Length: 392
Ligand SMILES: NC(=O)c1ccc[n+]([C@@H]2O[C@H](COP(=O)([O-])OP(=O)(O)OC[C@H]3O[C@@H](n4cnc5c(N)ncnc54)[C@H](O)[C@@H]3O)[C@@H](O)[C@H]2O)c1
Figure 1 (cartoon, rainbow, N blue to C red):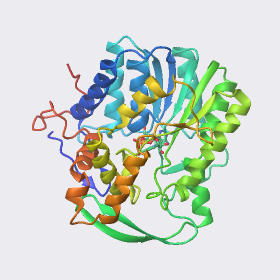
Figure 2: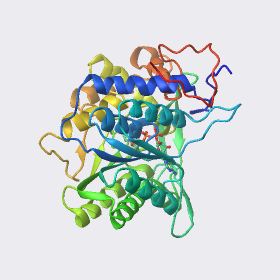
Figure 3: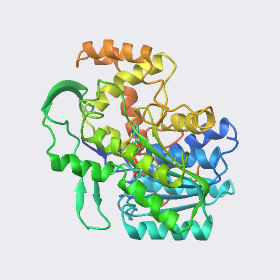
């Protein structure tokens, strides 16, 4: 079949197998081109391994650090007539490239919040890697069924306390408009913390530790977003921020149990992923930010951020913020970048968008998540949705 993008709001319901393979291949090329990262963990577990920051972490671990990996994600497999989700293709492409490089890559697909997936993962680690030295927690999910109580929680992307009026962007139409967002109820806030907070991360570390598959001196990282005050009303000072604050609590609890260096929350920059595209305000902030950072020569996507995290930031002298977090959002939040973003933000409208922001770049990045718009892929060619072609 000929596979084309089918976009519904902020998701694309199709994915291109060869395009996803090309995207993985290009990210591997970026990391390999920078050479080896000395001293990196050699046995790595990535939770949320199939897309965005988790996929980038797995790629950097294997192709920068020479690591064997176990990855966990929740993706949809293909049928004869339907494409898989992009992450499923990414996983197959990653496994093939890792095998070619002589590295182990075992991927488990299913609900990482469940006890069953934790047990399967422990077995996969014990059978294939023995233990892990690094656990990356890079999950972004809309719902979580609690493994002990069976209760299902949903995250809500809402402000706290009072309604807020914010500028946002319809990325399909290229229209900037104001919208009023209603505040979360206490239950919605608690639900968001239950889904995106630190409890599941702690449960993973407890389960891995009890099973004896964490190597002595292991480290675990969980990713957060703090961002600038332009996005705070819907992010950092909103339901998602409450969930992310809970990661800081969880990191401290893991450190108390496993040592001062065992757990860190890492604050990353805004990038285009499936998770971030769904948050109001963030795409508008993103299109302005990307244009400014590109003009200043500071732009990074997932792979550039995560490569910098493992190659430069973590091996360097430890620099933590007041809450004990590692910061790789330093370029995004630097004074010159934020001053210019804020100047443009005050002027942003549907009319000024083409001049002040990079909507075309955002749209291209969004399509790339699903394997569309990559150079070197023949989109007019027939594809078998059940086959991920190898990129030579
Ligand atoms: N995107 C950004 O701009 C940004 C910025 C800073 C920090 N972060 C953080 O990075 C982390 C990853 O976000 P992303 O944007 O890369 O997300 P993403 O949507 O690209 O990837 C999410 C991953 O989670 C997996 N997943 C979702 N539900 C699952 C489940 N129940 N079981 C197993 N796997 C599941 C998906 O399969 C996928 O691998 C999040 O903590 C996010 O807050 C993102």
